[in-house]
Length: 225
Image 1 (cartoon, rainbow, N blue to C red):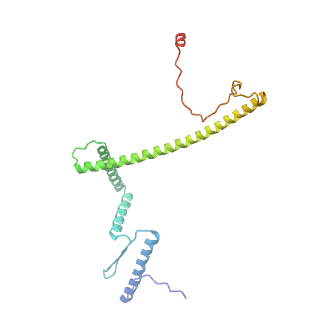
Image 2: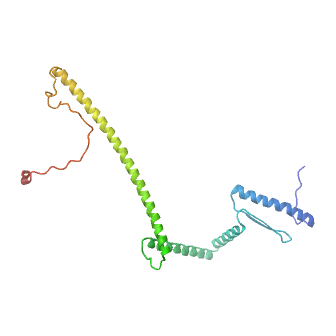
Image 3: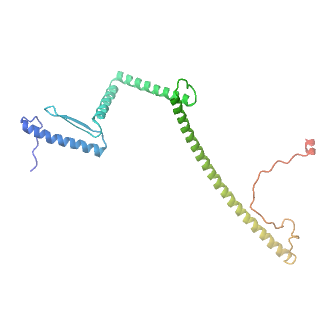
């Protein structure tokens, strides 16, 4: 048989009421602790017994829970009340203006402006900020330069490999020209000094590309102009 349904009403017997309070209080605090752990929730429970005794549980601190609750209730009331909502956004705008002013003042000081009235300690703090920023800029610059050097190195390697392939093709054509000349004139007539123009054999090295300088114009060409 199942348990009978308990009627939720005040227990008249003081002894039974105290026993029930003790059991259900422990169960409630246990459930609150489990809720905070399982759901990563911020939980705060405050219980006053009929005799005025305080029992509480909080997974962070009861003060922070109460402050958060108070702020949430104030924000909720401000959103429900049009006049309060206007005041809320006015305060937010004033806070943002203050933060913007502080940032602009700090920026001017970092730029070396409006330094009057600052102590040596304040100036030293600004100097440390500038050195830290400069160190970060230099590290970023070195990183970019290193990446560009690696990219140029890869491109140079590809060009070098293409240069080697072209060199091999030139040597192959040279050998083919030599074989054709041998077939045409015979091996006994072959002499490197008698090879027809255009078939002379050379030792080709990898090509080194270089920009040429413009030819100077002759005096006759200038006079014709």
